[in-house]
Image (cartoon, rainbow, N blue to C red; front, side):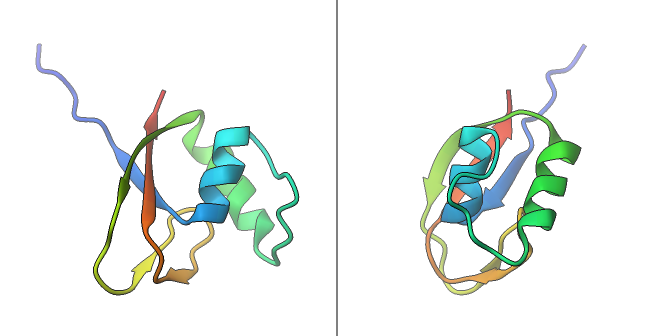
Length: 76
């Protein structure tokens, strides 16, 4: 039986904090619905590592374009 590869998700800082806390905390965004839907769909995630991306990337939590470093999360 093979070992399954861990799936990681790239999240912006706001989505990373929301995911790590298990819900919104002082997260004032128009797209909080997308973030909460992402959390419901993907279950409990834990931080994996910080990645310094070159250029634009899209947060998998909120769907917004980002320039800041990405935080990756994986399944618990």
